[in-house]
Amino acid sequence: MNAKTSLKTTKSSLPPTPYYLLDEAAIVANMQIIARLCELSGAKALLALKCFATWGVFDVMQPYLHGTTSSSLNEVRLGYETFGKGKDSDNEKETHAYSVAYSTDEIDEVLSYADKIIFNSISQLNVFKEQAAEKGIPVGLRLNPKTSNSSFIIADPARPFSRLGEHDKDKIAAVLSDITGVMIHNNCENDSFEAFSDSLADIEARFGDVLAQLEWVSLGGGIHFIAPDYPLEKLATRLKAFSEKYEVQVYLEPGEASIHGAGSLVTSVLDTMHNEKNLAVVDASIEAHMLDLLIYRESAPIAAINKESINILPVDMAKTADVVDNTIIYGRSCLAGDIFGEYALPNQLQVGDKIAFGNAAGYTMVKKNWFNGVNMPAIVIRRLDGSIDVQREFDYQDYKASLS
Ligand SMILES: Cc1ncc(COP(=O)(O)O)c(C=O)c1O
Image 1 (spheres, rainbow, N blue to C red):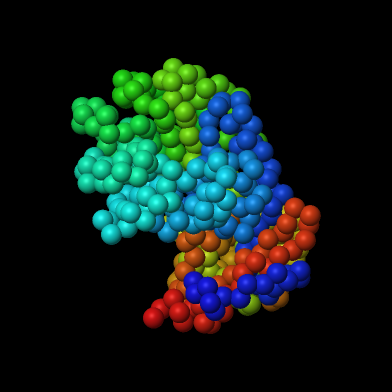
Image 2: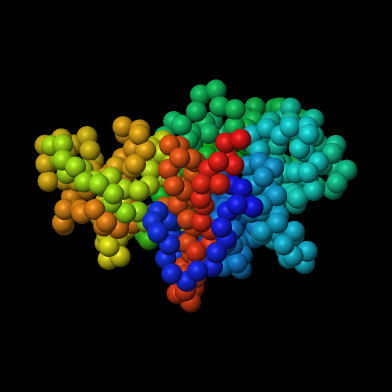
C-alpha cells in the first residue's frame, strides 16, 4: 500500500462497505486464553505476523504476548517497530526472525531487528551464522519431524520433498554448537490435544538427544487451543513436562488462535439473480479479500445480516445440488468460482442488504490483493470501550501505486 496516499482516519461512524471489522474485546478474550496457557505451562507466546499483522490493535495484544515472530524482512521489521524494542527500548517483547530463505543483501537489516534468528536450513545457517554471532543474536534452526497434523497437503510442512526445515538428525547434531534452539511447526488448525501430544512424542523420539542440548524450542503455531472444549490444562501440563524434561524454554507461535472469531468482512449485496438457486453478488471478493478460503476450498460463515448477529454456517455445496431454496453468495470479481458460500437463509437477500462474513481476521488482510481492481476493504476497529475507529481506507491511488 502507498502510505502517502492511504487515508488514515479516525472517524467514529462506520464507512461504506466493504470493510474488515475487528473487535478488540474478542481479541482480548483470545489473549486471556493464551496468557493462561503461558502462565500454567511456562511457555512464551509470539504472535505469528504471517497470519495477522494489523498493528492498529497491537496495543491490546501486547500485555498478553511475549513478542512476535516473522517470515520475512518486512515482517520482522514490523514486529520490531510496532511490538518490540523499536517501539519502546525498555520493553521486554521479543522479535523472532525466520524466513524460508534469506538473501545476503537483507541479512544485516534482519539482524538489526531480531532478538533471535531461526534459519530454515543448515546451508543458510552456515552462510549467515558468523554475522549473527558478531551481533550477539542467538541462532536457531528449523527442524522437520516428517510428520504433521495438517489435513491440507498445501499447508503440510511434512509433505513429501518438503523444503521446510532439516530432518537428518546426524546433520543437525553436527551443527549443535552453532545453535541455541530450534523451531518446529507441524500443526495446522489442530484441535485435538491427543494428536498434538502424540506428534510431540514422535518429535521427542526422533530428536530427544538434540532437544536436551538446547536452551529453547519453538513449537510453532497451528494448535487450536482456543476452541471452547479444548483441554487447555492438559496442553499446559504437557508443555510444562516437555520444557522440564529437556530444560528448554518453550515458545508457541499462535497466529489463528490469537484472533480467531475476532473479525468480520462486512459487505453489501449489489445484485441478486436466479439460476436454479438464489444468487447474490456482494461488493467484496473471496479471491481478493478472503483468499485462504479459495485456496483451501472452504466457505465463509455469516456472522450478521443487516447488523443482526446470527451464525449461519455454509452448507456443503457438493451435497446440495437440488436444494433450490438456498442462496449462493458470490464475490464481484470475474472469477467464476468467486464464492463466499451457499446458505439456507431465513429471508431472501435484497440489494442493499449488509452481510458480515465471520472469522475474517486471520490470513485475510495479510493476503489481500487488487484483483479486478475491486475496492479494497477499509480496516475498522471496534475499540474496547465500544467506540469505532476507521483505521484505514484505501482508494484509487493505492490501487494505482501498487501497479507501477
Ligand atoms: C512457522 C510458523 N509459525 C506459526 C504459524 C502460525 O500458524 P497458525 O496461524 O495456524 O497458528 C505458521 C503458519 O503457517 C508457521 O508456518
